[in-house]
Amino acid sequence: MAIRAIHLSSFLPGRTKTNTRTFAAKQEGSVPPTSSTAQYLLQSGIVRSIPSKEATAAIQAEEYQLLDIRPVWERERVHVSGSIHVPLFVDDADNGPVTLLKKWVHFGYIGLWTGQLFTKINEQFVPQVADVVPNKDEKLLVACGEGLRSLMAVKMLHKAGYKNLAWLAGGFNRSVSKDFPQVEGSTKLQYATIGGVSFIFLQLLFILRVLDSDS
Image (cartoon, rainbow, N blue to C red; front, side, top):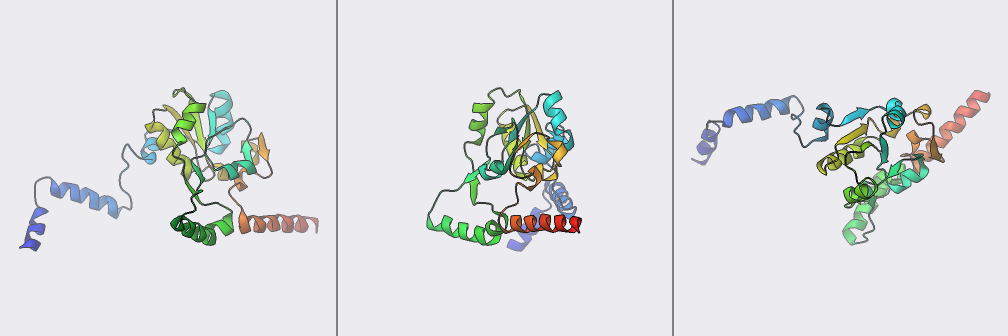
């Protein structure tokens, strides 16, 4: 009887159409975006997508403020001059046994190779942005290394009431030197997320290229 009850429930009014739509969306590999997703904000035009090559023009001509939401250590490597910095993720200083275990796993799989520290979400992110940019009508171009963290930030800021948001498409990793002519730091913007062993390999690659060009 239990099996029959479950089977019959699929024929209740309004149930079949919903299940069909959900199944079709899953079959296509995606669920239609809702108003709460960053994807919807971009597709609807509520949030503007700006590629790196157009970012400087948007900052200078359209008065966008560049909001860099990368962690402190990424920004210290290199950042765009005059940009605002409020990190979306911060170093997790908790040294409890569970967190320490997570840190060791993170170091073995990610930290050793990329130099990325174990982080947690900055719970004060939106209030800290509000301290720097209290006017929610200001134009903000939100940026990170690869574009994923900045999507999260855009969603949070939109929910908090910021009305003129833009997203740096693909993050700084997709930029080239001429996209942001005024930077401060020891490396290029597109390499700021590279650290650890990967950074050593990158430096060796540069050396090999120089030697090859001289030969």
